[in-house]
Image 1 (cartoon, rainbow, N blue to C red):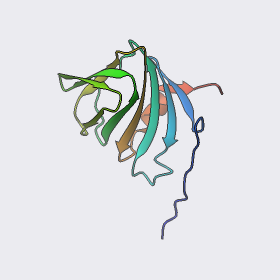
Image 2 (image 1 turned 90 degrees about the vertical axis):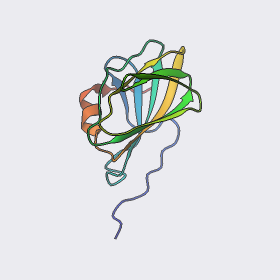
Image 3 (image 1 turned 90 degrees about the horizontal axis):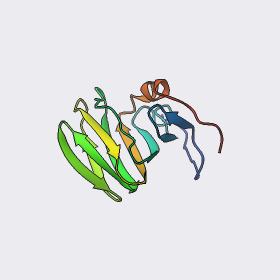
Length: 129
């Protein structure tokens, strides 16, 4: 028996958090809402935003660029990724990115949804609006 309920969010809905080091994360589908199957978020950042090299030990991470461009470093190999581009980074593989366009928006999916605690620790609630 499925105990999950449907999750529906319109534009502007979903918890928003300021990520330390820059950028706004909007949580679109949380691990709690997906039974832990995945974690879906939208990220918005400005030129020069850089994430440190890091790994996700238990989750694959997929990036889909909605608008803008990033330079993605996957285990020392650089990839330019622009609007409509996608990258899948397997669990345990070191990666980082830098926003290279004036602004960038992306969707990120982590499967399974294991990293919500990290994102809470590395961010703070964004004020409404």
